Image (cartoon, rainbow, N blue to C red):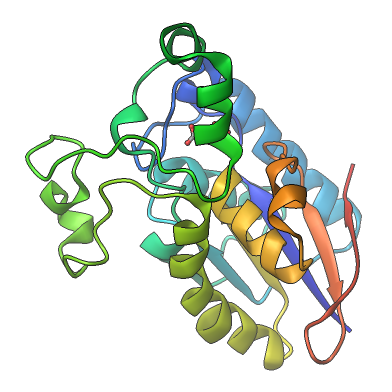
Length: 229
Ligand SMILES: O=C(O)[C@@H](CO)OP(=O)(O)O
């Protein structure tokens, strides 16, 4: 049996300010850092040890993983970062306050943008300062890979090659793996691992900073999953 730990980053400044974040590289709040400390303490107290860590190229996830591993005294664990684990790209909503956007467009529309797996938030254009093509860390991405907006299905489509190649690869080598990512990139992964329908994933919310443990069989099919609390 393989054990895989999924961890959503701790509270970020824009989680606290209730803003659409997406690929915006905002930092953790003090609460977020404390959540990561607690996650590390919980993992350590329950005897977890990792051979490999995976995270996004966004500092809220990178720092959460670092703090968690530091708390476990396992900062030496190799970590691979990939844009494929980034949060869903929220297009022109990035930076807007969620409550104000709901007042402007209606709560139903905003809920659809946030949770309907096939709904696209309004897109940006490539001349928008938020376009990832302007950012050094995404210089190696092709035009097709650089998003202007993303729905959850598209997030899943770019997470999956990384899951299959890197994460499953490590699990097949019997490595103990922690993946520290984001609300929606993790929802996409969980939809895949748990075979959730679109309707089921619509109602799925993953809390910040709470380790989600998956026990997998030799085919990497799920045996059971639970939050470590
Ligand atoms: O703003 C975001 O990028 C995400 C995660 O915080 O928000 P939501 O839960 O609305 O998808």
